[in-house]
Amino acid sequence: MKISMFRMLPCVLALACGATAATAQTTNRSGTMAERSSFIPYTQQGYIGLNAGQSKYSLDSGIGNYKFDDTGTAFKIYAGGYINPNFGVEFGYLNFGKANRLGDSTKAQGLNLSVVGRLPLNEQFDVFGKVGTTYARTRTNGYSNLGVQTGKDNGFGLSYGLGARWAFNQQWAAVLEWERHRLHFADGKSNTNMTTLGVQYRY
Image (tube, rainbow, N blue to C red; front, top):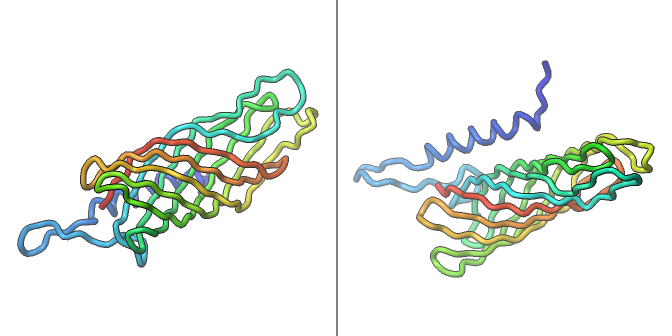
């Protein structure tokens, strides 16, 4: 039985990040914890995160009196690290959920790589922005006689986003984030937004 790489990736990424976080600190000779660099090459201040929230597809509903809801339940699993105190890189898996459209559903999932810039406001709060690319696979189901092409598509597209982070202790932080991803659908390219709330573990 074949298993999709995209279906396996969230589990693999979660397990890898969990193992990395568990071994991210070591005890030195004095008995205190010594901080280690990020597992991402050439970066430090590594982190992993899990966010969940809502997606919004910018898609035509087609023709006909069919139920149309362009929002879905979205989530993402991601990891990152900083090259210096203000700039870093981040990668992750994103699932945009399903939109009700054309008498059926439209869905998307993808892999993202972004450059992240952050601006600390104080010891606990910072804001950040990111820009990068998302490789996504999409599937549009429904009645093709409504004038909209259905089927699968995939490809790279521009992504960017803004967010804020509140570190409530040295290792854990709450994150609010908005993102926009340019995805390839069977009936053309379209923007899909994600608004999520989540937690980050800094190791």
